[in-house]
Image 1 (cartoon, rainbow, N blue to C red):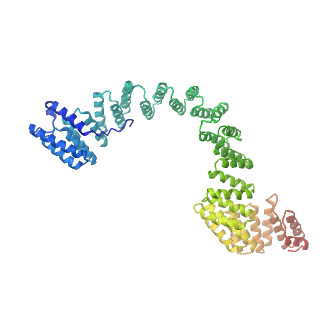
Image 2: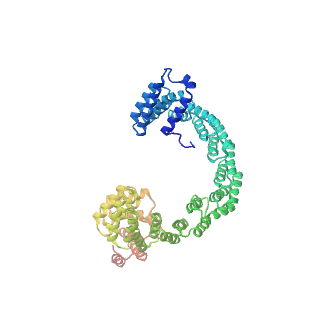
Image 3: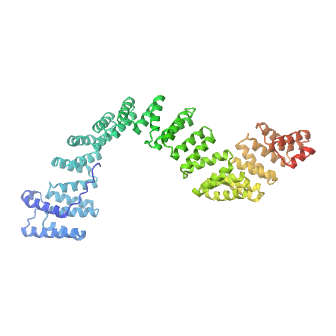
Length: 581
């Protein structure tokens, strides 16, 4: 409802004096509509009035139960004390006895049918009892009796709407509008009613009327433009938006709406013109601009455009307008990331972190890029700093462990992984990766029992993790332990990725350890053919398999290839020198 709640709490003496004044002046007129035909002496009337005032005193003291007894005693002696019936009704309402309250206010109205306070209170009770039809009748009558009391128009219209009598409600609003002129709340209420009726034409007229009445309030013109766009009145909307910009050339909503309109229309020139006007305006919220910018990014991601040139133009305008905003540089980094320029992306992300350090998603991007670029010393430094800011973020410890592992700082890596894995309890995929990395690290440290336990935990969380299945199987094969388990895991990884050369190499080596040399060589040949530059390990393994099949000269050739590919060690040198495994 558009007006204040119509629960009226009355000043006790004011109401009682007013009511008694009316009663004494109109006793003869009201005799016919009294609540009782019992003849009451003047002495009894005075007694009843005294009892009533005693009730009023108790009410002021908030002794409502005592007050109620006095009021009920008063009307028993003299039923035409309308103020007593009214007080009883109010106390009934306080007790949430709506039925009794309604009955007693009706008794007050029988004595004083024109009392506007009683009528308002009566309408309130009717509403509480969902008797909207009767409430509407009461307010209609009040409106006619008190045509300058504007609240009654709002009340009647409110209950008409409750009864789905939209046309009647609009009629009441129109009458009110004639009295007070065009008002926001009335016009918008009528606008909503017309929308409910799917009456687009009259809904639009209300918005036009409102915007004409308040030309300095551009909110209404913006609302009109949005309405016109939604109803496919695009040319009208364009004119409305241009009208806004004549008054306020920097109007955010109009600039961005026009930009969207031209983009949908395929008018790229005007789309750029208005979106860039918006972007270069420092008074427009950066979040609003970023939302527009992501339209360009999403087009690139959805393959509707094959470049990010427009997006880069926008972000450069963003930098000019908001150079001290961390979000500006973060989204700049996102664009370079999408463009597969990680070094430039990293530069922008680091700029963002210089301005604001508490945005974890930016740190996360830095970690990934530094890991991909093998910038492990910087990654250690950044993750150590991030630990101070985000001590409960598992990913920080993961990358810290990874960087330390790559830098051969095994103890620091183990410490980071073991702390991080506890924090990843609600992230099973990440937790599995922690255990997998711990498995590999402990294998390097020759802590084989710990290695196996961590790999088992990893696979318990992610049984189909190809990376973990392959690595665990490979390390077992190198140790020539649990070869059946290793073979089972290797085959599973190949089921998931049958042409992966690394996985094929692992499986071939397991066969080799099982002395299945012919089958091992066959699988290893496939692995080598699938990769442009086979690793030194793969070449050395192939040489070992050839040797076991008495192809000694070929074996020596592949051992030499392994050395040329970077493999080193006394054992390999001896094999090449002696021609023996």
